[in-house]
Length: 296
Image (tube, rainbow, N blue to C red):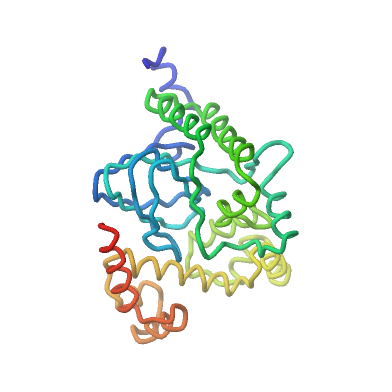
């Protein structure tokens, strides 16, 4: 439909544009690849098409029309389109909630009460849109295509999406779907991720100072939120980034060793064997074979 008073919308301070938009549409051609990295946690909806995505420990995961995945903040995600594919990327702020009576923290507490660790699942959960969510997504796509990108509208549409999840999916499904970003304190988590993203070689002491904590207080808070020490978390984040670069990048292993401040390629090789039980060459070879099998 034609947008009335378009110039008034486009010139408004609250009009979302570029990388700062709360909700964006992304179109990919067949065999096209792209990298997505947002400062906020986000949900990626496949409006139509088929793709494979990789981030962290997840490699070449398949998703199709009306599937959705959760993508954590400040983590690079590589997407490869198997055919013409349209995506909707919805950013989630730290104050997000399913409704006034059910928050992400409450979902997390129920998860802990049932004996879940509260950390990311080893297997990513892909949500399939039901009819209500599908109709919502198609209506939202039409609004965006018409040029309706007002901050107020987009904030309401994000709240509507979360409310629909709350209304039509079980708490077990929500826990599984949002597991990559569920923890005891989303604000604390987001700040940690943000500071880490600025300096991937940050030390625990430096991170504690940036967060305005004493070292002991920071370690205690960190263990409560992430269920591991800050040192373990930093090591795991570096391992995830390395694993992604081995699988999805084109840099040589010597270049990666230099980039990640290893003293030598041999030290880099030892690190990979300890973390992944395989050499960098073996990892790249195995997953390139998997990629070929998916038709990429």
